Length: 181
Image: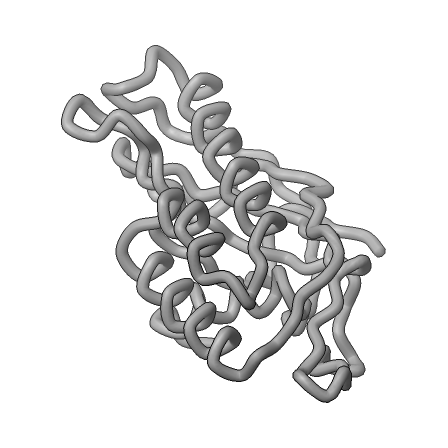
């Protein structure tokens, strides 16, 4: 999976759940940032941003592009471009999504590079309730879809010039936080 396709794939994962894999856990802490007083506060802000993004994703109606705007509002960069492309394609293909994506677990990523401007999160995402069907009513969800998806999410932390933290990258992962089905 390339990082250019990762944001589009997350939307597909959250809506269709096509990524796979779980791996051993690790529990490093994020690096503190100048915008936050400590590591725990920075992680909490990143987690809150991701959970708000998932809430927005759960409110999407693929037949109504205005519902995409709340998802776009929580993203920037590659994640925003990928979401826009993916939602546009799913809307054009007249797909219908139903069900709720649930966040099972979030932890700081073991790959956190010490960048004070972002936090990497390892996420376990439950997509077992999510369906995606075409206009004929046929499921377009991969038959081998795993109910629990493993994601790595990069959150660009709020700063003095930007009052809101935003998701900048979303990728599948095969290390870090262990997810179970």
